[in-house]
Length: 251
Image (cartoon, rainbow, N blue to C red; front, top):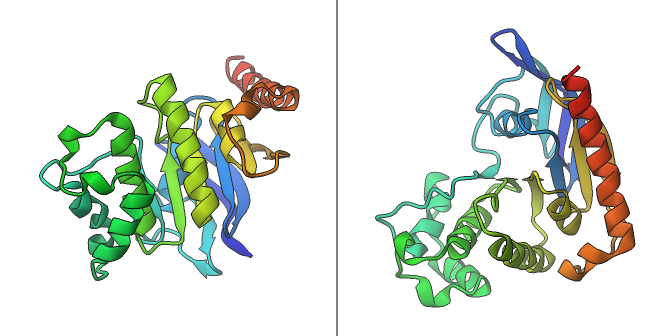
């Protein structure tokens, strides 16, 4: 079932076009990653989906409803974790329900924290947590929101390599268990292939959709597939697309 449909989205800022005629859909329960050259407009696309920017052309549809230019329909996890330092872990994860004017579901929040391995930290404050733990708190907060689509904007970009790999494996296990619908921005092609059902490859600015890549690997997955020859071939193909787009921009 199609959850999200993006139809011919274009947007410009100060007469500089950022997105050009972007169209794609996301199926319910699908994990879709977006990759492309740095600065091509990936985060701008998320801001359009979230209603923070209204496109010059095109429409955003969620569950068959036109939500173009309106807010509150997607759950957004930015690059910066943005946990409130004066709230403990439990109160931080319940914030998404409060902002949506939903009744706090403490039992569900505690259950989710236990799944995330954080049940011993309900009363801890953000400055007492490691980087990976903060990421898990932020992800649980996003999952507890009433929205049907999670938009994750480079959530692991600030983590060191080993913590990032741990978080990728953790996210894989959580997604396998709960199957939320996820749109995921990343600069790491390895990460996109490891996590995703499909990968949307964007060109340089103004961003167009170069290709929708089906990821051929069966689930469940783990990081051992990073050395699979087919994995390496797919990574090389996507990298060639992005490098080609960057070369075109520089000429």
